[in-house]
Length: 510
Ligand code: ADP
Ligand code: GLC
Image (cartoon, rainbow, N blue to C red; front, side, top):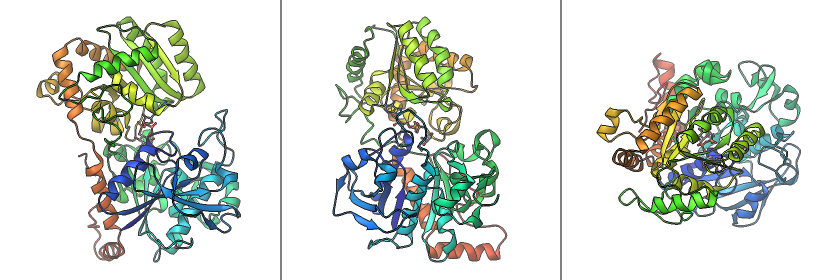
């Protein structure tokens, strides 16, 4: 089976968040099942620099009027995964972050930038690119690739099947209707049952509306997005496609995120001998210029600084952490108002608070290993990866019970602790009181070494490797093979109750 995996970011070539981690790890896990997966993403400058190129660029003629487009073939560093970078210097060769200019403002032509990614994907899918390879499945991810299913919707009989994964319903890629003139989408699709969303073109809606199957990254989130609170206006479309929507939990790539083999750590450790974590904490405190104390818990926050991640609420809770004798360390970047407020707190509490603004992958590893507790709250969380990583590092996550956070962390109730299944702490309400109470419980537990050790070991033992979830994607791809699709259509014609094994089912957690 051949799968074209299309994503706007792939670690280690370009990353702003969990999408990049998944776009590396899932294809790697699928390849271990002998699936011929190939990646497609834009040739941002950092991606071009890091790619292990293999062969000459392949020119593509007239993509959305651009004549200087080429596919640069290579291998994803540290893997055998083939990848094509789409070189189009006028759209992708820019300073700044992937989606924003150096001042943090979204690039004015993002509609065009990601329409081009989608058109190239559609060309490869239709065998209209000069390649001797054609996919059976196109797996498109997030709004950046949302119009791929719409572009392919016309040739239902001859095209590959399309799976569309929603990593975050809040980022929709909605653009003025005038963009239809240059994104190469048929105006016939611009209507409320198509790609139109409040008089704009919505890339995410296009993906949900036209893909053969839609997945999202945890079972709980798959149910939540049917609700206005989590659907961000697209709950109606999600409900329309409910029969084709499934939740498959993300995994963690333990070849990169495990203290037993993490090359970023000063000492390695595992659940049988956790002593190396002490050395990691000591080194981290030194790096952050915080005093080494023998019994203060170090509470970390490693996150995009956004409302989604409850950065505003975390800010409110930091003084209480300090008052309780804890230390706090932030590694994050995002909205300026949050960045400034965290820096201000670090100034106010120089012995207890550290705020590092920026994006630094090795520093994230050191933070997760050296901290005792990770704050991973969220107003909504499709899956969340940092809580998975934290557990493996013996760092107890504090999460809000929503989305993938609810599916992956077992709260330290007395019963769960006693049974040895508690892996973190969770709370319900979006409030400083609720988060503060969870922090208070965590600090209290931390002061009881035997119980704390039990919590750490259960977290380190929990297995969120990709193996299980990759198999679910594999089953999904198989259900979309032409014979299976035909069978499904025939069954649909004959029985009102669709017997497709995926229809309407939210796949349960591992
Ligand atoms: P999201 O994708 O919503 O931001 P996830 O938890 O799925 O949240 O993934 C976040 C990823 O980004 C993790 O790999 C985390 O370590 C990383 N990350 C977030 N902020 C930073 C940062 N400032 N520096 C380094 N890594 C970061
Ligand atoms: C998004 C979500 C996050 C998820 C990640 C990878 O960024 O916000 O919850 O873990 O995608 O699927």
